[in-house]
Image: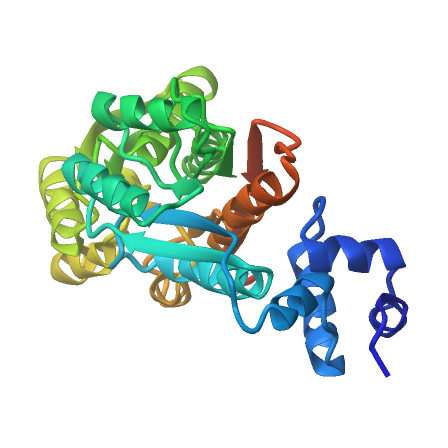
Length: 343
């Protein structure tokens, strides 16, 4: 006997409509609820209408294709982003939508443009991208959007492209939150160092912008000694801190909005300061969790990479299947603040 939506709803303790939205990716549902519903559906052997149509057609048939382009494939924060992409890809494949992932090693405009063309040759119908913020990428995305290839940006954004939606952290607001934390820890005064990744990555730049603006407004006695670029490399983060603490022995705070956060620990182990500066990091990764637990950092701001990965694909799938536009231009993930006590 075929499993029904009503049976799944009863097992999950939710309404029939919630189950329908979760299984057909219509509307916004909390990720943990959607995951529970999908797990129950799989356990019970539920077969959707789309799966029945594919089976009747004699095998898998992809009606549509979504391309995905990421940056910084080796960065630890990409673990959660990629998990979201993988899980949503498996669901969409069961519904006849193929996902083609291309991972960029760095923040490289030429590489990203090449990957866009490669995916277009594969016949993609939509594109989810973590864009490099430059004129060449901006113009190419604008052409795609105008040419009926919907584009959703995630994790990092780019203006002037006609993209349908951005999914990710409100980076400027998170930067202001980081300034508030730093101000509280330093009681409103002291020297602070900012470390970003690449200046062509808009996410890091906006975090720094928000931090600087809030610091100037709310904590005028705090002094920003500089913003250094680490290119998301551990050794560069370490070098930035060593140089700053050598020039400013009274350095009171460090904000790292880039990858390579392990360089914080390496620098402190080399310097062995009697009292280290307060440290705020980004992204809840296993390595960063250890930095909190080992007390090399004080606060961590997470951007919910998993949601970024799956929601970008879900929105494009809705557009391809039902011509449904996103409910908002900006779909922000939560600004989650972690310490060693609430990991």
